[in-house]
Structure formats: structure tokens, C-alpha cells
Image 1 (cartoon, rainbow over the protein chains, first blue to last red):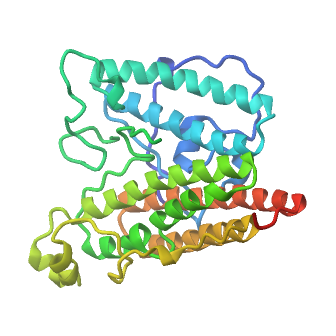
Image 2: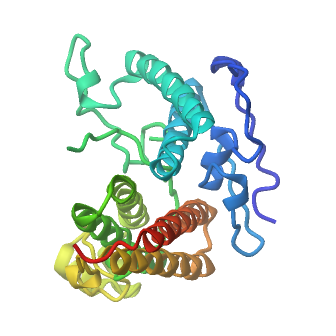
Image 3: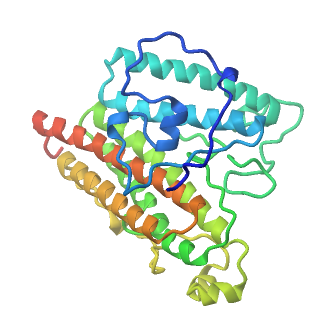
Amino acid sequence: MLFEDNNFDINLSMFMPDLGLSRNPNILDPNEGFLRGNMFRNEYVPYKNLTYFKLNPRNEKEKLLYRIMALSFAINDLNLYLDLHPDNKDMFELFKKYVVEKKELSAKYNKTYGPLTVTKDVGTKYDWLNSPWPWDNMGGGMYV
Amino acid sequence: MFKYVKHLNYPVNIHKKDLRMAKYLLSQFGGSNSELAAALRYFSQKFNMPDDYGKALLNDIATEELGHCEMIATMVHQLTKDATVKEMEEAGLGGVYTEHGKGTYPTDANGVPFTASYFAVTGDPLADISEDMAAEQKARAIYENLIDLAEDEDVIRVLLFLRQREVIHFNRFKELYEYYQKKGYEKN
């Protein structure tokens, strides 16, 4: 059916190694959680026989942005869980781990490809306004 | 305070013009069960939540929903931007072109403009949160209708993502509802 032939392979070596935290098997990796639309395995409810699409970043810029978006998604989903379970230490540790990784990768992205937030625009010229904007799909990266 | 991040919540990159689908997708931009209704509903209700669990959850889900509005409007924009006036007219979008040109305006799939009467703020946390649970279920059902109508994988993958978010939000609201019921929170 859908997407089975869509090979997804992202080079994980560019990302931070796992810090050896005790991992809850119910929590998905951010890359997979992002594709599914949720980080918690037991809450994933596919529609009919449709599962989820895999994304194929075409270049280094897209790979980096893909990971930043996946981390941003994971942080948001854990954020909602922590709002109701602020004392869950393991979840909070995982949350912090993703926050650190996202911060590092965002800094790298901002430096190489331009700012993702306006206050990161501290280069030699003001380039916050430059396309592509996220709703454009011409001439820009696939994932913006 | 809000801070804009220059990427979507999930990628939208549609290459194929599809006016029929654009018309249907407007439902999730400005319809009664839309992302816009969800964002404004939780944003408005958060001010009267009785404790930090509710304030945090409604605040954070409202923020995410605003990101989903941007995704839906992006889909509509990408599906229509290359259309000619004649094509829009043939797809039943002559009225939309008359009122909005190629602009993206929040209406439902039948062209009815968005209104705040699509959601309630009652001052009663249990009433508000049970509306939120229903809203997530209705939005999930609308996404399933849209997936049934869609033909392009570029569209379907985004709809599957958004549908799953409705499932998660429902679960979070349900948990909050059950907790508030136990706490015995009433109108304040």
C-alpha cells in the first residue's frame, strides 16, 4: 500500500549520540514520532490501512532542518505530557536531552543557512526576510 | 508572548494543483471544527482554568493549533496558486475568486466565513474541557473525511499527521477532564 517503497535513510551520525538514559520503550525516536504525529507508541492510532509517510531529505540543509523539526515536534509532544505529569523525571530528562540537541542543531542551521528565529539574525546583514518562507514551495528547501 | 519560528510544524510541499481539494481543505482553516476554531477556543478558555495543569495544557495546545492553521493555509495556497481564473470558476471557486482573488481566507468548505460562535467559553472548566474533547473528535472525523476525498500523497501525508495530533490532544484533554472531575472543580 502507501509508502512502503519510500526508502527513508537519514545519516544519524551527524546527530548527538544517545546519552545512555534509561529509555522507555513506549517513547519513539523523534524522527519516527515526527512522521507518525505522536511520540507515544501506545497512542498511535492509524486510520484504515494508512500508516505514515517517510520523508526523503535531498541534501544536507534539508537533513538538518528535518532533524530540527523532528526534535521540535518531540519537545512539543513531551511538553504536553509533562504539563500533566511534571514529576515524571525520566520524561523530563528526555525532554531536556532533546532541547539541548535542538539548540545545537539550530545554532548550526542559523549559522550555515540563515535564521529560523528573528533574534538569531546576528550575521553581517539582515536576512530574516529572505525566502523561502514556510508556505513557499518554490526555489527553497523542501522542508521549510 | 509569541515567537515565530521559520518552519512549519510538519512539512507541506505540494506540487500538484488541485482546486477541488483546496476547496474541501478550507474546512480545516475556517470551518466550525477547524484548526483556527481550536486555537481560539483553547486560547480563550485558558484564562479561566482553575490550576496550573489546565493553564499549561490549554496554553500549549492552543499554540500548537496556531501552527496547524499555518499548515492548512499553506496547503490551500500551494494547491491554488497556479490556477487560472477559469479553472477556479470551473472548480466551483468562482465565488471565492470574486471575494478573495487568490488570497487565503478562513471559511468552511462551503464558503461560510469563520465566526467565534463556533466555540464556547463558559467559565466552567468541566464544560469547557468536555467541549475541547468533542472538538478534537470532530476534527479527527473531518480529517478522515478529507483523507477519503484526497488523491495526492503530498496532501494525504499531511492530513494523517494532523489527524493523529487530534487523537493525542483528545487523550490529554480527557486526562485533564477526569482529574478535574475528581478534584470537583466547578464554575469560578
